[in-house]
Image (cartoon, rainbow, N blue to C red; front, side, top):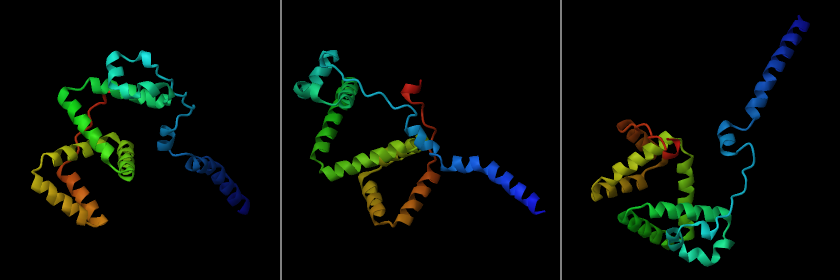
Length: 183
């Protein structure tokens, strides 16, 4: 009887060992964020490879361009492409937002960066729900927006959670449209 129990226990341990190793492994979300193969370092962007329009948009970086990290050069090049594709109204809005950004204290900028990273970490359906709720909020009359802001500020964490759940039930998220890069 004891030898049978020992064999069964051994079999269970042997069968469960791979499961415990799997449970201790890095969770799938973390492995998706970290590539299995180290990413190649970003390639520098030559100033001369930018269009004359991009160079004009990025003119304040011209003299220091070669000293910028390649990641920054690539980000600026992509940003200049997006800017040049905007309508005049969109450009004005972007300039206004950037001017406002520069007036923010460093702590508030860091807080906003952190919130953006949290937003980017959400699943696509939840990001879409946040966008829809934001647009719905933007359509409200100013007095209603102010009332909702005050209600949120004065709410406890439990009340805030309840408010979010109520909003989700009242306005279920529509499926996110396919991302332009996946078409």
